[in-house]
Amino acid sequence: MLRIENLSKDFGGLRAVDHCSFEVPAGTIFGLIGPNGSGKSTIFNLVTGFLLPTEGEIYFKGERITGWPPYAVVRKGIARTFQLVRVFRNMTVMENMLLGPKHQVGENFIAGVLNLPAVRRQERENVKKARELLAMMGLERFENEYAGNLSYAEQKLVEIARALMTDPDFLMLDEPASGINPTLVDNILQHIRRLRDEQGKTILLVEHDMNVVMNLCDWIVVLNYGQKICEGTPETVSCDPRVIDAYLGV
Image (cartoon, rainbow, N blue to C red; front, side):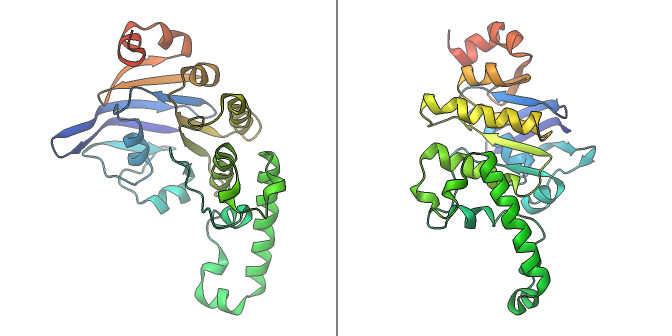
């Protein structure tokens, strides 16, 4: 579904990503791991259009999307979350959710001002969809709660649910388990598995927690200093001496 070919990104004299190539098959949970500063978040930002690559190409469903702006990437079917939660804390959970859908009729100035029937109809549909997603995440009771009043783990789930409002085929999760009480991590992981198993989503995730990665991912790419040093199943990667040296520091 996603193919990256010889991708590189320079920041001045620093090469954050160095000729990295890999493919994410459809219907998988694909892990991207490595030490801090290894280029993981930079690759996320390159794929989603927040950064322009220095070299290389990015393909989604066979179409070249290199250099596309973020809005075009979203419309193509890619959504993401961020390492640090980015909910609108002073808006309700439902208001956060309603920011997600693409091609909203009410965004047209005249249609919005006149509150045309098409605007009202689409808003009812969006509210229904938002409630379904919140129920799936176990957040339906927080619909009218300010997002800033939720726990950090709940805010992460709101961010995932809001990303799903764009109807993505490909979901990119940046450290979905970081900063969360270990007793609640399993809840996050169950929701991620359900997205693949029940909704057919393809998921690319960055995560530092090796237990999460090994128990969740079908395939893993390991980065170090911007270069791919290993690729394979969790079992293969966990036994690779380059990974043990670079990532585990053993």
